Image (cartoon, rainbow, N blue to C red; front, side, top):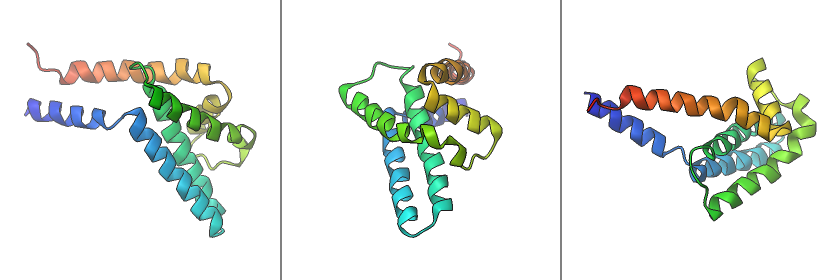
Length: 136
């Protein structure tokens, strides 16, 4: 039973790559354009929030490994797109105040965001690893 849990955790964590997060990010951007073209600004704003979450996930993953040239290009594209929203933070439909703070910190202070949130994610992943690793 523990081996099944361990395999499931590995499968789940392997899907959390910069490349996968970048492609999720792109799919959300496509939704933004689609919703704006059909005059659904409310849904476009929600797609922007989803894109920002994928961008934050991709950025946090840089803490865990050396990034490749391709991943650097993905991160640069993400940074370029997200920089347009620094002045539009007040227009985004946040679910919670903590989500608003996290996104605002991501867009305004990349270094602070990484120290505040990525380090927390790293600690959490280490705790999960030790919980699911079979004793040997």
